[in-house]
Length: 245
Image 1: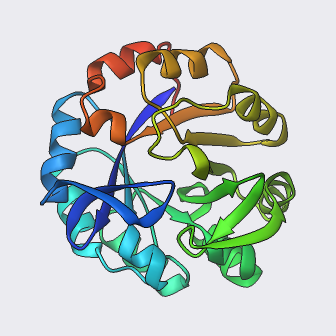
Image 2: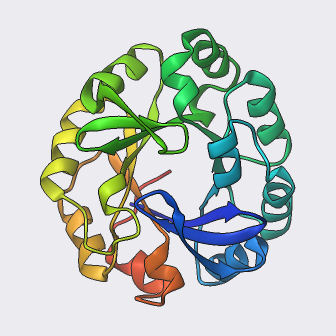
């Protein structure tokens, strides 16, 4: 499994939210590039960058930070937040994103999703952000009645090969993943998915790896790294044997 250290950008800083709540924010680094560099120097082979301003406002607001991170650190970056038009996707790719992560628009605008997948293929990832079994949208600020499994099935029928599955209730809580939930989602995903939510210890990482789900090939970790619960090197060791991204 691949470790994806998270760099969430809001107001120009690297931050973390609890359960996606914009009112419950901790600033960890005034410069997202500095945070990203620390993870890469620690051994990270991918980075997960989210434009929180873009996610809330519906259009990218931190592409210059993406350009700096992708241009200076020499590792591939997946980038999401506010990518709700083909022009926004193109701009993120131009700024250096190896993958683009779509959210709300992938569910609400089939033509946009089809266009993005046709243009960029497996470089398009869709994030399925779940609260209480239902998908949230608009940067997690709006709750829908769409069942996560139904959304995943729909996306796969439209040609999406890779997903991010985020547990909003567990995000930033450090209380571990729901392993039964992860295993259940693995039975639905026909391509590959990356898990996000609640990682707080090395045991949590090892437990995910021990599921041995071949389509679970990555995990996103944010707060636990910022708060030095473990290092990147320790996380990579806990996730062995690694899989290709």
